[in-house]
Image (cartoon, rainbow, N blue to C red; front, side):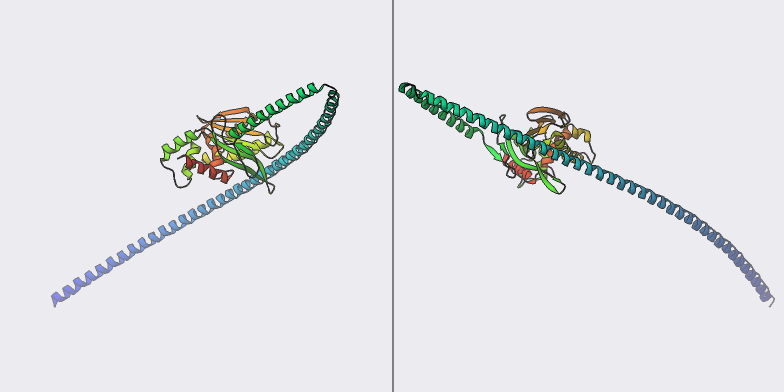
Length: 368
């Protein structure tokens, strides 16, 4: 019994010790829980501050974006107004040119009437002389008639020879929409490979500006294409056109004005728009207005270009772009980018005349 009581006492002591340990553990756990909850409240407060800071930054960015959008729209409105002014100026120039052309045509008709009157007087004088010569002897008349027959026969033979030479030499291709003709072969042996038409949409109207013919050194093109591709593809490919655009093989575009009364300034504005776009496409989206302006930069702004006036722009070996107006040398610019951009206007993704590009592509296939 004594041993049992001792064990019970010892057990009681151990139970009390265990309970004491449990209370201490509970107290420590409570402290840790309170510390954890305090940390969570601090993190929540910090997160709230960061969220408020993020929302403030977003509001500032939205305000800045709104300002930039308003600035962009303002710039667009200014550009539209400027474009409208330029279009109105262009139409005013065209009206003035048409009026001047009308005056020149009336002057030309007046000159023609005066020449016809003068010719009539000369004819009457000739007939009077002929009547006076009737008093000459019969021998002289027969000699005169014989000389006239010989001259007529000689003139007829010369005219027939000239017509035969013209048939042999002057072979042309007609641009179907305008009737403008282009020789199939130049004096230096370069060949015509395609004809087309440059049109411009203005105030809802499509205006024919100029017909054009594309000439090339076909022997050099043939060497280039065979070296690069070996065999001809089934149809003209983008790579085929790009090989021609990127090369420095001699090519020339002859432009024949079909919209009467243009000035060099009007042609330059139309020309620089297309060339500037090609330069941007080939230059990573970057403009280079100064380079585009060099092509016709030295020409006279008010120089008249009547219907039939010709402009020739050629890419020479070594990436030199040469410009001529009415057979007068205007400029030569050495620039690989400029040469590529110029040919790109006619053979690139968005050509001036899609049908002309396709005809040129068919010619490339035939060179294989």
